[in-house]
Length: 283
Image (cartoon, rainbow, N blue to C red; front, side, top):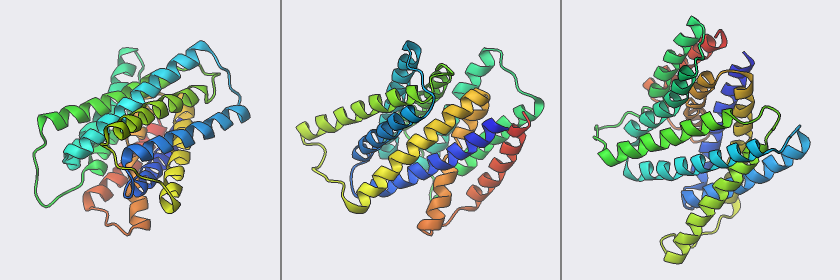
């Protein structure tokens, strides 16, 4: 039960982070927003490591570094998906792969849930598709490259969850501190390379844009910590499905703040997600 509550809270906050990041990315490049996000998240988690019980060990550093690399790969491939489109099809593929990878690993390790838990996983996967599905006026067939990018990003997210689940239980937020540091270095390097080659415009994040980018980093760090706690309190399979429900938070915030209309299929997805959460709580 605790794992499900932590996972749901993390999903909602992750969704908020995506919303804030999207608002900031309206004025500056998504790569720049992610770089700011990583720096802010790193600082927040570094402070958290001083306040929370934290043990720095070789395993904590290794798992943190690996998740940082996986996270950076997921972001780069995600941006490629956004550029190729259509996200109405690629987004559900990405989310499903991200959830299925940890479930498969858990199954291979011999982990089993109760019948209610198994039903919750299936219902949760359906909810992911419905929430991520954005109906459009005309159906556009995605390219093979776009599908491969979506699968690659989903695999990277799945690897992130599997590896962070292997971090020492007494390490506290230590692996996440390393993770955000690695991701920040990767995204910063991309920014630097783009500036040298003049492929990225000279942008400055100020005012509301900077505020949104900072909020993106703070909420991203908070969500990552909640998911880490959820993993340590429960099953990888359950948390991976809850993690993939993060777009629900983005949709709700967009409806409240930007007055965007929630499609009927997405309302259905939100309702199905609640059913999935209830079943997973009984796992």
